[in-house]
Length: 222
Image 1 (cartoon, rainbow, N blue to C red):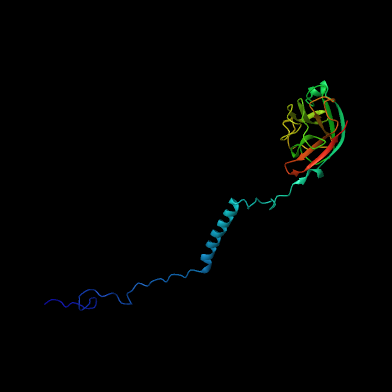
Image 2: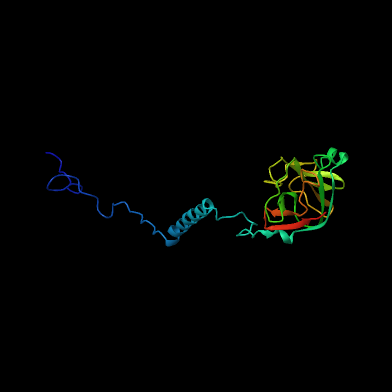
């Protein structure tokens, strides 16, 4: 006789093992709920990164310590005052010192009465009484002299108009665009021609640049 088969672990109809009962089931660990903070904090970090990146590429984000807006240009008339004017001739020693170009040329010496400028804060031109630029017939020169020595100069070719189209072209050793224009300085102008060829009424005008705007002038008397 065959031994009896237990029906405890089989389906009596199909013979397929029955699923385990509750007492044999593996417990399922419940998933912890996701808190709002866990979602919002990463989202806020991503949004802040996007905004800061946009500001940086748009040029709106400035390094620390810098103002949010650039200060307006300063009128040059508040930073420079010309002093006395004297007229003379270009001499051999002055030409050798690169303070003027041609011996015998009319040479103006303009003192600086007050200044908070640097050499790079202005450029110069000489004008006729009507405001037009004076047209020199020979080689001319602007120079800054301090303590009897040339510290900066710009040469102007004949017929080019007595005007500095840019800043100072040459500097003495130890001098640069950031050097201070002080009351120890004088501005020399070789007009590029003799006394008799030059109109008696001329004006020296300083034009602001590099943070300065406007002009300030002095009459070149002789």
